[in-house]
Length: 340
Image 1: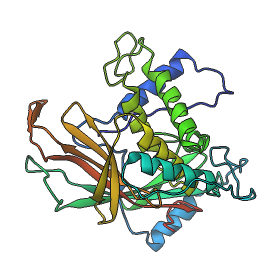
Image 2: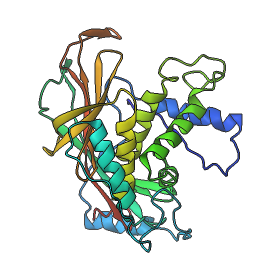
Image 3: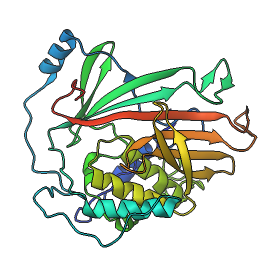
Image 4: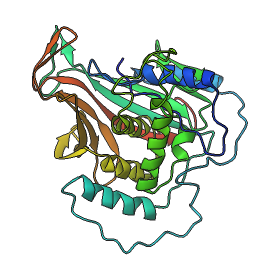
């Protein structure tokens, strides 16, 4: 699977990790690295209806949980704080900087209500079949598949359906853990600076090879902080159910990354309209992130070839779609198995 790098942000108050921890983190990071083919996403199992038997399974799987304190973080739990006032005016969105400007205002003024540590996010994603009978997708896909996953906000565990049954798994399989996302500042400039700091802690270590093994040199993409920041922020948006203010801050930071361009019109797999923020990688691949410009919701991603190329023995042609997915639902629920 083509996946985004797993990049762990640590709070400044914590001690630096050991070399063994870094090696393990980088191994996971490289496992999540997005490549041009065939797509980039974590494991999504097929969506199943939750029958009465499934609901019973979910109830059995629920175990006594120790409630933690409120999740620290960028949004903080500011439901009791007065809404900030801003003299800045929203703009008509005609480019990335307009989007960043509006996102900063929303992030500063939105009063986020943060989920409780023992609550879960429910995500449902659609994926396009981008290679059928050896041919790459061009235009609207004929086939899509759905996947869904539940993740607890304290990163205690996750759940999905396997063989028609809800499976509860301990530990986190997220690209970026919720605790790391919730600790980000809600100012887009500060958030982006923190992301660069996170990316740099991994990309600047030449003793770790591309696969996480010691001794190998870093490749160009390892050292491209802008590219890795782009991927990192997308992972935060793609794998999460986030409050509006924090989501806006992430989008605002994304729009500020150098060489990120703006596409004024796009439609996702669920036929929802939006805009794109994208980069051209390697001179031939347009990596798009689809965003709703008014709610800052992450709609999905799409990778499109913009220049003919032979890659790993495969002839790629302009217009080929390498991967395409849409996040169609992202909500907070009280237990795995629930969808609302």
